[in-house]
Length: 180
Image (cartoon, rainbow, N blue to C red; front, side, top):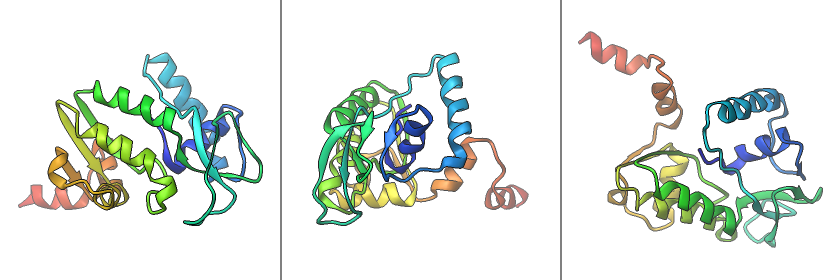
């Protein structure tokens, strides 16, 4: 499992790492600590970034600086995974037979912070089995970065619904179809 994008900063904070002014859901830190413990207990490889591209502001022209994921400066926010992390994620993905990707690795709308998403998307095109790009943001990202829908096994714009389906939850639309 590889965690990037805005979600990763809650994971890094749960590990006691400095995340600067990055997006974080502090109320979820206990839940994330439990998830990390479960991953370790069950032998799940958890890939978190080791390097992060940061900037002082959330803007397209903000200067990007590469820092260690262990110590994001207080006046900086993480906006993309770094090149070493992107390489690590890609190598892990390319070995998989089934990949479900939900969420960009960074702020792909800003050129300086799109590379992590691009590297991960490229890795998905090399998966020998099933590759699913899930969610509207992920679908928009791969299209904006020049990938064709046919480069992937399937693209679903139903991110939240896709995740709920994978969790085994009932989806009202599917229930209605079953009643037909």
